[in-house]
Amino acid sequence: MTDLWVFGYASLIWQPGFAFEERVKARLSGYHRALCIHSHVHRGTPERPGLVFGLDRGGSCIGMAFRVAPDKAAEVLDYLRARELVTNVYRETAASVLLADGRRVHATTFVADRGHSQYAGRLDPKAAAMIVAGAHGSSGANVDYVRSSFAEIAALGLSDRWLAEVVARL
Image (cartoon, rainbow, N blue to C red; front, side):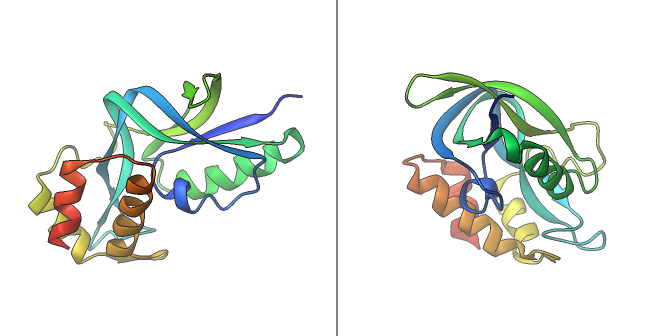
């Protein structure tokens, strides 16, 4: 049995919620990180949706890859599916990621389903900040989620002017 790799690009970076053996900075090509999902559960409600990150088509994304021991793989996948597939706005995907140390691994990640009704598409920073500022869901305030994710993304040494502008408006 082989190790499971999981690619995290937002809250999984700072709050994975599962046991792992190794955590390595990694790049996923073909997708970019975006606040492109209306959250009806974790960071908002159907009446007042929040915004959460998704992997949207195009570009690339630097995040974290987590190596999970084979004996924990089924448990971690069950946990991730329960966490990420609440409303099926994400599609579970196996993708090739390049680790910072040069290794290439296949990792499980969750990408935005552009055909889903919760897909928000591309928003300007002002509109995104207005949505985030007023939303709260079962996992807490949308503002806390966005600020924490931004801080961890910055701690990786990454800059994102669009996201910085959203955070500055909160």
